[in-house]
Length: 149
Image 1 (tube, rainbow, N blue to C red):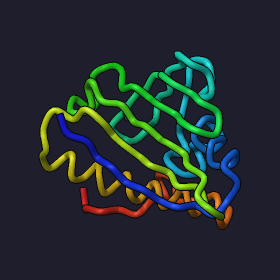
Image 2 (tube, rainbow, N blue to C red):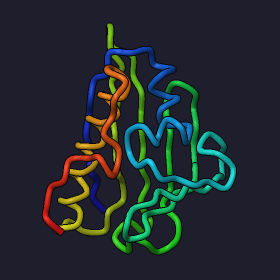
Image 3 (tube, rainbow, N blue to C red):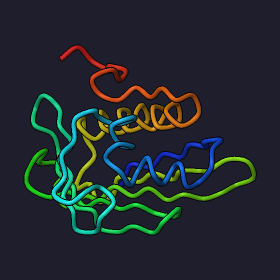
Image 4 (cartoon, rainbow, N blue to C red):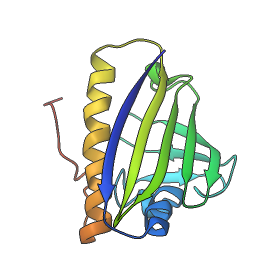
């Protein structure tokens, strides 16, 4: 198994970062404007559908530690390469910023799709940073495009 890892520093209150990760309204400001959940993004066991033109992934909220950690486990079969993976956000206060340690864990193999996802996760983490620091993120469909498909 292999992982995608990124780290970004955000100069805001740690509770603001947590709210961006643990609420649908927050997620819609930095990842995709189109989400649905079974019981809210801030509730353990809830399934969140992140919608994109190809359908989009679904994740179960697996762990929530307020102002510390958010973990989503991929469910269902789309995209196939994400089966069995987890997305982990760890929040660490360091001086005047919150460090977000991001991991997309348990990839079965390295390949083109993993490379694509790694870069897109970096772009969306910068969108998270912008949403919090400037009030204007770039969630899908306003995100940076990395190819011409």
